[in-house]
Image 1 (cartoon, rainbow, N blue to C red):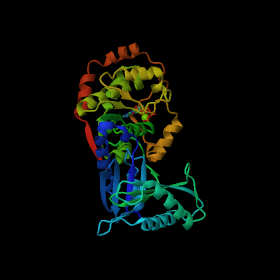
Image 2 (image 1 turned 120 degrees about the vertical axis):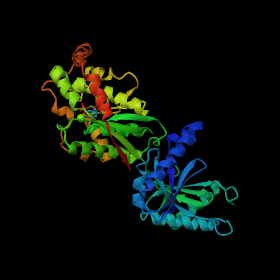
Image 3 (image 1 turned 30 degrees about the vertical axis):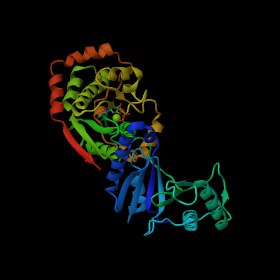
Image 4 (image 1 turned 90 degrees about the vertical axis):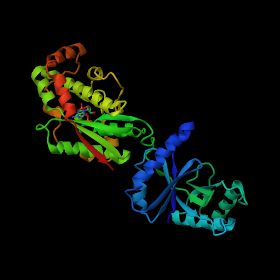
Amino acid sequence: MHYHAFVIKYAEIGIKGKNRYIFEDALVKQIERVLKNVEGTFNVTKVSGRVYLEAKDYDFDETVAALQTVFGITGICPTVCVSRDGDGKLPDPAGISKKVIEFVDGVYPDKHKTFKVKCRRVDKSYPKDSQEMDRDLGSDILDAFPEMKVDVHNPDILINVEIREQLNIFSEIIPGPGGMPTGSAGKAMLLLSGGIDSPVAGYMVAKRGVEIEAVYFNAPPYTSERAKQKVIDLAGVVAKYTGRVKLHVINFTDIQMYIYEKCPHDELTIIMRRYMMRIAQMLALNTGCSGLVTGESIGQVASQTMESLLCTNAVVDKMPVYRPVIAFDKQDIVDISLKIDAYETSILPYEDCCTIFVAKHPVTKPRIDIIEHHENNLAERIDQMIKTAIDTDEIIEIVK
Ligand code: ATP
Ligand code: MG
């Protein structure tokens, strides 16, 4: 079947009242963005409470795959359109019936299905009203395909027929990613490591319409270029959905060495994490982000017990820390990682700055007062080191 357009369905953005246009405009902008990378001629419009995409000379699979990366879209409906003739007329009822029968025949080779016709007559000058059309088209379909059956409550196929500026026929709804369109919320700073959890956390927050900026703490020469490349690739996974991610690569080596030298080794990870959070918050404040995002999950490792989370959380005082996978089991996180094509990259076995300096027996119940006391050992040089780390921030723009 050759489709001329797609009706784009969106759920939540439909209910935003007066602000609805902001969400629709963001959605249109994101659709236009992803289609720039797809061959074809496209035209996206907002018409009476819906987004409509006309498509010419395009590849169907590529177009659908691109639309499936646009947050805010809940359904993609491939649509057959019939334009008005030279006199501005749509086909008469018999002509519409012929088109609908062709549509059903083309889209559903197996006719052993139940169906329902749902007409919408936006052009009220059309001679028949919607209910008459439902009935008449239904009986025409039954005449053409006796194997088919009507089921008005729970049909296998819901055949939508719309009489608007043109005639639209669609039935299939290909699922979109859901969520809210990128650019309809603010911006957050994602602490992005090379692991499985943080790219998933970034994806989940991005799905709510939030733009993502990311920070990776790098420890050369203990961590390699390929470990860094892995993080760039993972930022690219999020950027596939949001269009761009600005990644800050912070050289963390001196700070880590200093902590290693001055603090008890069983507290290294917690203290390092606290400095990561502090620096991430500073970067967030400098770049207009209004929250941090991490891939932490309760109990996953020593640095993510409730007591450890209390310690790492305590240093962030100017914004919320969003932890979308906090209560997820690892397998649930892996499932999302697989779905968004991050997993294969996340499991590449490259060293991480945390694993290099990790203690054999890290504390699992750190006490905040003791941690703070040991951090006093860093008083002499740490502020300067943080400043240097931020001043030498390497910014990598990932644009999709
Ligand atoms: P991930 O799979 O995201 O690496 P993890 O299970 O390995 O998570 P940790 O290493 O304890 O967990 O890290 C917890 C969180 O701290 C990460 O999800 C990430 O948000 C942040 N984080 C850890 N290491 C780094 C790093 N080198 N750079 C940036 N953020 C980091
Ligand atoms: Mg990690």
